[in-house]
Amino acid sequence: MILELADIRIAPGQQAAFDEAIQRGLTTVIANAKGFQGFKVNKGIENPERYILQIFWETLENHTVGFRESPAFAEWRAIVGPFFASPPVVEHFTLLAKSA
Picture: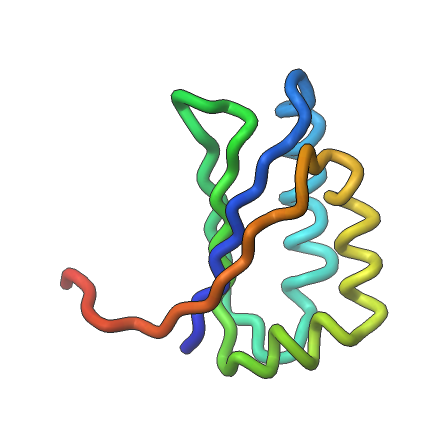
């Protein structure tokens, strides 16, 4: 399993609208992508314009090729992109260890 980690910064004062948009985009667009295995969204406490999005993929290519090169990526960005204060920083990880 691959973890996609996106550090998202949105424009101030847009939290409520972005909260709805990101959840809608995840459930209506990304959840239908091949290799999608789940997501988590965390919202900043000290910095409420910061979000950490975690998406779990079966393979790296499911995200980087299958999703990113599909029309669904443009659909996803149309939903969440207008809120971005800057482009998200996105990285991929493999699991090393976890608690029980």
